[in-house]
Every structure is written in structure tokens, then in C-alpha cells.
Length: 209
Image 1 (cartoon, rainbow, N blue to C red):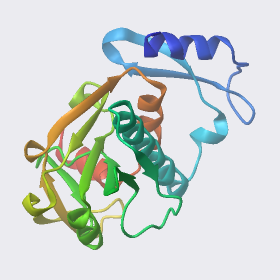
Image 2: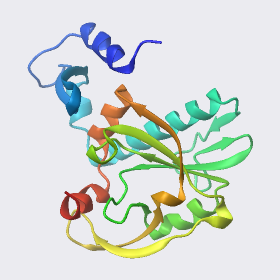
Image 3: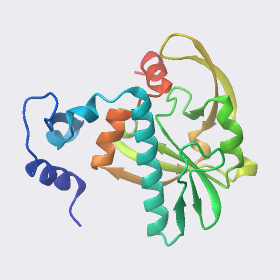
């Protein structure tokens, strides 16, 4: 199998590129500082997507990655066709599965959700956290499986959102979850870095060096 970074370079080699603006596809990105700079294919339009679109794209990347992981392990996976499904993101062997793709709150070492998501995340048969790449996880995508639903515990705290307003949140300890997969150097890793727009990005910048 071709290494992910090599695949990225090969994809770049096949694209038209320019200095920027609509229609151009060149972006210079330092995705892995210890490996230096390399080029990656991304359209200008993708780069300037609004937050709502970026959030959906981030969720889609995480869900598709989780589906791929479980299918490779021999499980039957059916993705939900309804973006607003209030019960699950997918079915795995007939069990409901909820996937949350985000940057954790690194200072508290917790995955986070808003209170209105607690019921869905608590009641899903399987809860998966997809951690977006950052310096805190050496620029990998890390995938964690939460404890069984009767073992899930939530903390409560208040953080400021990107507008400076107080936001009540719920958190689940990263240490309570099981790391089931890591991926480094992929195009998905770059896309997650570019598209993550959660309030935690702001909180982390304020509280975590």
C-alpha cells in the first residue's frame, strides 16, 4: 500500500496549480512539522467554506472514517441518510452508533458536547470520538471508543464560545475511552485541520499552550 503522504504528493502532481483564488488548487501546508513542508491538493472554494459547511464536512469525514474502520474489521455498517437523525449517525451490526469529530478540551483532557447532545450520546449503543489532528496528538487522527452506555459519565462546566458568551458544556474523560485507531499523514487529516471550527478551538487557544 502506498504511504498516505506519498499518495498526497502523487495527487498534487496530477493537479493544475496557481498562486491562489477561485479555480486554483495549490496550497502549501506544514501538516507535520517534523517532516517539513509539502504540497497538497485543495480548491480555493473548499478553503473559504463557511463555518456551517465546514462543520458538516468535518462530521462527514469522521463518520466515513469510522465506517471504514468497522467495515475493515468485518462489521456490517449502514450510514444514516438523514443528516438530522436524532438517534444515530450509523448502524453497526444493527446497533446505533454516534460519532463526534472534534478537538478535545485539552486542559481538562475531555471530549465535549453541548447539553442538548447528552441524550443522544448517552443512549447510542456505540459512541465514537474522532480527535482532529493538532500538536497535542502529533498531528494524527485518533479514534476513541467510549465506554458502554451504562458506564458513560459526564462532567459539567462553563466555557466561553468564540463570541465570548458563557456556554454550558458536558465532558467525557479521554482516559475513560479506548483508543482503537490512529492515522497520520492522510488527506483526511489535512481536511480535518482545515475544517474544524468548534468552540473548543477557541477555548483551547485561550487555555492551552
